[in-house]
Amino acid sequence: MIDKRLFRLPGTKKLLLMLAGLTLLQAFVVLFQGKYLAEALVNSWEQKSLQTIIYPMILFASAFILRHLFNLINTKIVENYASKTSETIRSKLLDKIYDAGPEMISDEGTGNLVTASLDGIDLVENYFKLIFTKLMNMSIIPPVLLIYIYTQNIASGITLTIIVPLVILFMIILGLAAQSKADAQYAQYTILSNHFLDALRGLPTLKMLGLSKRYAKNIYTVSDEYRRRTMNTLRIAILSTFALDWLTTLGIAILAVFLGLGLINNSFPLFPALVTLILAPEYFLPLRDFSNDYHATLNGKNALNSIFEILERPSAAKNETLKDFAWDENSKIDINKLQFKYNGVNEDEVSLDISKLKLTGYQKIGVIGKSGSGKTTLIRTIGGFLLPDQADISINGQKVSNFKQQNWQNKLTFLPQSPYLFSGTILENISFYRPNATLEQIKKAAESAGLEDFINSLSKGYETQIGEGGRGISGGQQQRIMLARAFLADDRHVLIFDEPTAHLDIETEYALKKPMEKLFKNHLVIFATHRLHWIKEMDYVIVMNDGIIAEQGTPEELSEHNGAFSQLIKNMRGDQL
Image (cartoon, rainbow, N blue to C red; front, side, top):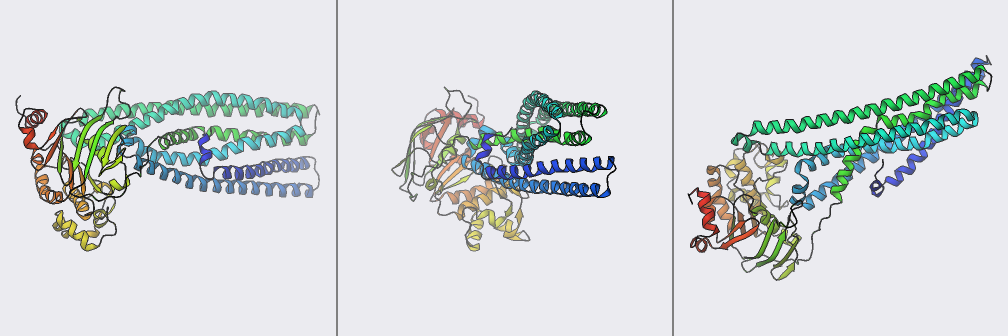
């Protein structure tokens, strides 16, 4: 029930040693509690002096208090460990996602990663709070009590010894069934998370295409399947608890009958019979507690296993093979024999296959192609967000295997389709690349991006708070903040645009075009787009088709013959072929 990988987490072994010591003390306290209670009851039954009753009752009360004190200390230690360790895992998970970038998001799904980082960590924390305490109680308390019961009455000890394997056998059988159901439930939960988040993101598009109701039915089907799987899992979990309660109750009842008959026949004294009967429920209690929380621990274990799988995904770290350099008009990049394949793609299929490509100086390079042609894959590979399976790359004469180089990424500014803004002030969002920039520098960048009038219209100006993901401002203003970031980062001379105006109306895009053209100066610009008017602004055009470069050259050169460029332009214009 404990994943072996848990022992690699910091503090786990120390925690187990502390819990073992506390649980052992707690076992003896439970033993003394039963012993002194039985002693007080026997003395009372035999009508002995009041002192012989009060003294055991004081010891019983002391043992009772110590038991709950040890339990409180145990709980505090475990909660502290669970809180710290779950946050450590969350931090490692977020670092892993950040380091892996879009490749992991494509493979795992955004909904799955969000679920793992939020709900998954909560389940893991609850798992930590339950599993260590339950297992320690089940491993230490019953054996200590059983040894004492054997010293009092061998037949009772044998009876309890026989019942426990039966209980454990039922736990294993029902537990395996519950685990199978829980695995399917968690897998369905992951699918539901991905479906829901993707649908939420694409809701405006679905609404525009009239598909929102159809997709609502799809979400209903997936969520109803999740509900059905959850109920099946709970049914088995409840059956497991009922079976265990029934078996333990039956065992105690059999023991009580056996002891009662022994007392009637004067086979043994009252004290051994009474202390055995008092300790029998305590003997079964750790097993019952474990069974009651089994489903909760199972969900936590599934979540932890899912997180460990993400953390253990092989990923190439940044290869610090590229020495620092400055990008200027004489700089150049040579890309040869670059291949990249997404996970899950057939072995004979390649998502990106670039035989030869050269980027030089302050060129403005347009990347065009139909949807799914490989534009975004090429852009993200050059940005260092995707690692090619093989490549021969030279940056200013320095040979590297991929673009995931710190010194390369420090030279570029990336502007995606949907700009991501953090929860904070407008000033903090503009200064993303240069957090130590002065207010005057930030104002100048905002003015260059056409943000000045908008910011001046706000009561708090640059200190205006915006929500996570840019909530509270329009898409056009979000893009202007992204442009202001690029203007402020004037030491980064490589601009990578991934269809930055794809979600904007034509009026907003036209308003943004002037500051964007101003930003192009003294930069290497790699601009993926499907808007025709941007092609006229480019010095060089790359036409993508099915992951390969179908054509490349200046717009004038490509227009002179009826090739892939001309065919694509006709399709984009809606011309009849």
